[in-house]
Image (cartoon, rainbow, N blue to C red; front, top):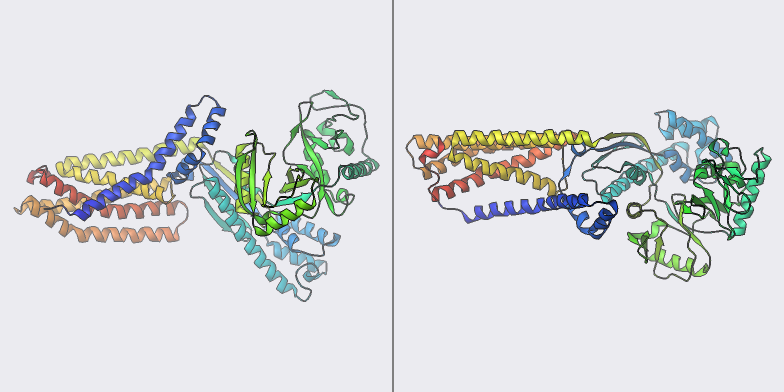
Length: 614
């Protein structure tokens, strides 16, 4: 028998490609081990920043573990259709807001469709939908049809934007499906920072550039609000008030501390705000939630100029008393520019290298508008608002003609990366809420990994020992083919960024049995040929020829079954089917091509003889 150059080349190529595909997995493991060896978190962070590209590249291309092995999160999220329909309405008045409030209340406690609830509430009030939606000439049936289409499009867009965010975050093989008309089911494997993922998924990413009103206007508005609150029965107290830690803080002209939590709701606004000599207004960290809810009240909004709104900073500043305070801003309600013009976002560090920030680039339309806005407002402040919170409000120093802008005031590198992700992925069409959340802990994942790896190891050892004992020297070829078979399966999973789950391990174990079964058929045919007195060369050739049809039939039927499982199955069943399909194809290759070339080599070196098959 002579070696076929093509077969040898094919075996070398498959082996090389498999090792190349698994190299990022090994590199990812090595880099993770290096990071774990650092004594401090600061050193580990510096290492991750300096090797950011290499770490991200290895992590992106490495073999990922599924939710059942690595642990992670299972979430059910719901698109806020009431908010979506409020955005689509026009000519909104108090009656419209009252109706939508009733719809929101009913939607929270009912499984009925939001559109059905909306239409029923309008019928109850004897108002046509066309008064607020689309054209006056449209019938209620036509409008509900259009709203249904808007709802379906919003769910689809939300799913794709969430998928883009998750892909950029680096979660392998996320499972993202829709349920009904407003819910999205998400499974994320290997997630450790749960709060970060929640914020990443919930954030609408509505980016706006808004002009700030003058400081004196802000102070007049706050004074007006305070007067109104005092007239409603709030208790004014210009004297020093104790903070939550019991310290006395002077009230007049310096930093005011939030009153105790039990009394916060009953005090006027000036008792929870701090006004500095430069006109900047702050609210203490303890009172932020109270003031935020206050600014959302309809009676408070009515006291603010119609073209303006009150917003709080996204991040606190530390003032001279050593405590955290959030800035209060009065901005123009109409945005000068929105995030739709952003084409690129990149997390970076400030010129001094101390603070993380996000650099943004705009398209041609945004560049032209940004140049006009900055040119017309030199010396004024422009607030960069994301999801209703002000990240920064820089003073425009000069006209910006190149369409670049920066978001600073960011607390950490991770937060900067998350902002980069949501800006790249785009804004959600409507807010989404987490309705259900389940977490698979890392200890459970570790148990699964240990059990899965042990099953693979013992399965491989049992099969290998059996082949060596039963077929002696000929069993070596089967064992070598088995190693390559497992290598190919894992490399294909890694190469296509698929994840290895517990059902996937079951598929690999089953694949090992199939691979050995094919070798058993071949070896038994060779034994029969040797029993008839043929030479080892003739017996091997005849054995492969006679066993080929049986091997092909069994592998084709297994592939067909695995394909049907993948097509009609979900979740774990699909994971099993994928590894089974890959393993079956690899088994056919190793059984028919690899072992034959090994036998040919062994015969040429007189390693394989008539006595080698037991």
